[in-house]
Amino acid sequence: MSLINFTIDGQPVAAQDGQSLLQAATAAGLDLPHLCASTRDGFAPMGSCRTCLVEVEGEAELVPACRHRVRTGLAVRTDTPRAARVRRLAVSLLASEMSAAAKARHPDTPFLDLVARTGADPDRFGHRAAGRPADASHPAIVLDPEACIRCGKCRAGCRDVQVNGVIALAGRGDGIHVTFDAGMAMGESNCASCGECAQLCPTGALAPKALERAGGRTAVTAKGETVCPFCSVGCRV
Ligand code: FES
Image 1: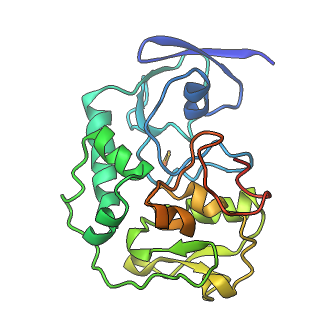
Image 2: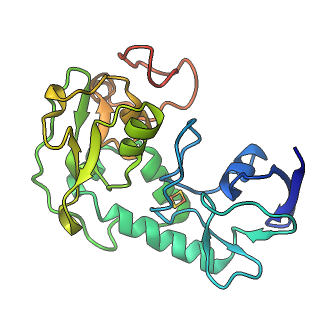
């Protein structure tokens, strides 16, 4: 397969045809900010969170690195003031989806890492109202809806990676929320307990009960770090 040569922040990068900028950057060891994308097999980029926006020479608009295909000769800049400002804004807006209490309940998550990394202000646009009850009906996973930023990663993981299709986003506008089998309690749904959703969730909204109890983070990043109580079919950590 022929290689595509382009640059990111002036650094030469060789990518495979068909890769996204984010995939190519990750393969080259560069750590671009992103949130709703995943490297899991079968996970199609949604392009919904806009935290991976970068500048591409010749393009008037910023482009999402997770959905923009590499092309020979592209000159990509991640470090411009405009890209940084817009990513900061996107992250600040996402942060307003969480209640203040949920931010305090889940202090050690990939999302709050991204808040810190981008310099976003998690309080700039206020907080969602508290009072959405948790769903603790499942034996191994708990849903804290106040921590949900409605990024859709859990749905994509359940549907596209595990091909379970139990999780959906229902409702409209401010009422959009995670559901299981179109409105059942998680513990009564056809959830296969694979743990994919909890592993993908960047905010701790869906988390293994064992990690919740231990106060641990919800995204396992390296083999051997997990205290996951699940079966062997899901996250493969
Ligand atoms: Fe690219 Fe979310 S990671 S839009």
